[in-house]
Image (cartoon, rainbow, N blue to C red; front, side, top):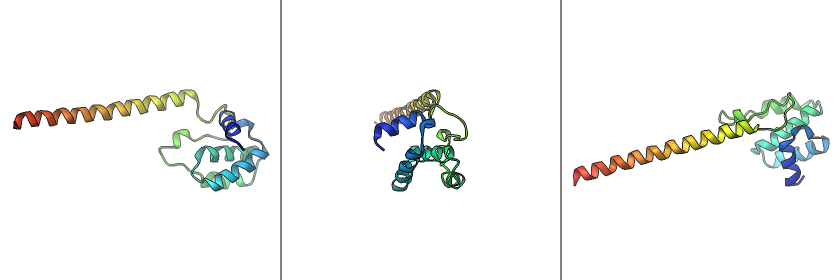
Amino acid sequence: MNATEFSYLLNKPNAVQDKHTESLEQIVQEFPYFQSARALYLKGLYNQSSFKYNQQLKNNKMDNKKQSQQVDLSQETDSLISPSRQYRKLRIDIINEFSELRDQNTLAQEDLMKQEQNA
């Protein structure tokens, strides 16, 4: 499987076929923390009605930070992460980054005031 085919499957997970599932299984074995490949592999197992699906699903729980990106593979989806979720995540990241910068700026101003008072 090449990068172009993998990208296509990320955008259209319903297109995962048996041949893809085999390739994805190899990728997951080689890169066990590659969550996108793992999600597509699970989708392939689900599409095949594989007996491996339930066990793999249990083995693939994501940490709390990643749960918002986890896919309910039993439902038809057009992409793994919807554009509105991507936008929300980007917005939250920007807000968090701004808050950190604001906090750093506040600390810097407080340090300057202390230095001026001591001078």
